[in-house]
Image (cartoon, rainbow, N blue to C red; front, side):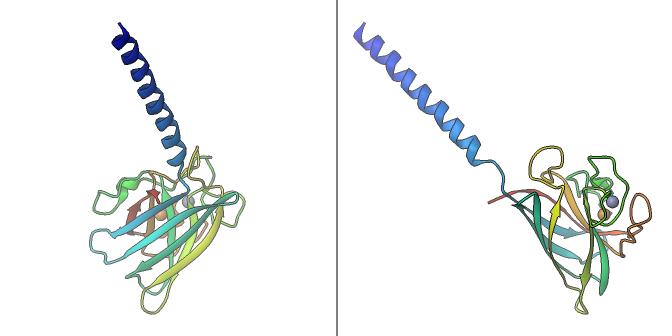
Length: 178
Ligand SMILES: [Cu+2]
Ligand SMILES: [Zn+2]
């Protein structure tokens, strides 16, 4: 009998430790950073790396992309985290959780995923660091599980709903990072 009570106590203790362990773990996994490795689409040599970090009311986004034609290139977060089709059409349209028109990121009404253009230098390398309000790592405007795409041409900030920035030359799925 004593052994049985002891066993009950022990299993209650083990369960308690296991539960508190779970609670601690979920707090730790609240994302504060995310990354995307951008891979070339069919017939493209463009590749890059993008990081996202929580910063005030939005996200700080840092990008480093290579293999572009010199000049501006449309840069957006797209709806689906699926870069699997050869032209990256599988990523869907611009991420637009609040049903806004396409525009540039500095205009009040724009798709949440409209990040503007990246500017490639004469060597085809584009570096960008921007603070974007209206994006998050949780909730309706979370970028986690979406994708980021750079295009062959400049975003004109007018043409609906794409900005007329042409083919998708690199795509990366956005995931939680350390
Ligand atoms: Cu795009
Ligand atoms: Zn857009």
